[in-house]
Image (cartoon, rainbow, N blue to C red; front, side, top):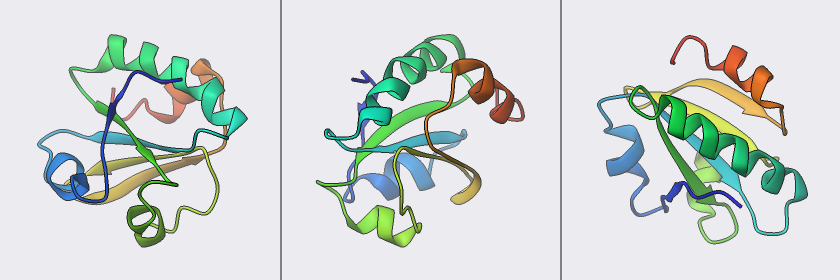
Length: 107
């Protein structure tokens, strides 16, 4: 499980869309095995690169509106938001090295 700060449908706009820096949102669920694999990796990335990118998580079962709005159909999905727009989407569990390559433009 990840130790990232959680956002909800109610806090998504203020914490993600209006953020001054890029925000990576981990769309996840308790029952999702691959989500549990990605969580500790995101914790590491947050510790290493949290000054450049804000890392948060959103539980899709408890917050169905936001995933629907952004067409998140599978989990884990990692969306990077910048200036209120999705600028990167990563679907599925990836090793840390692959995530670092995907996020190179932001970190």
